Image (tube, rainbow, N blue to C red; front, side, top):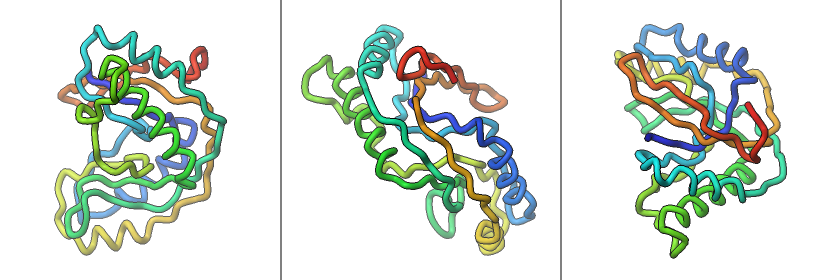
Length: 190
């Protein structure tokens, strides 16, 4: 099963939808807007069913104090002149990076059977806290696209982070489908 660990931002859907609408109103690119609003803390990839209980147990042992995150500015991956993913950043970065690192260390330890953490099996890209807003299907005019992204107005919004989720992602012809397997701390549902 294809798994990742994320923070849910569904409660900010109206604000995020407004930002998506501002981005989408441009002929410079053709977009596939995301319908699920989350910040991936760690992508695990394909994990055997036999590891699921151990991963859940490890994640249930992670503790953290609730913290707030604010919507930041619009960004994109990879870099100029290419635009493949459009996202909105999150700040402040300290607490979310700390939580992401705890999760990474825990999952690495579980995957290595409790021995020295095995980070080679996990995504090793730099963690940039963000929520994906759209994937670019076709870029027609990079300069016009950049101008559009600069013009987007982000209304101030914040959310209190009290839990994270283990999510299964199933790839379908219509895009990914997500199913929350568990929320941590345990017992708290989205």
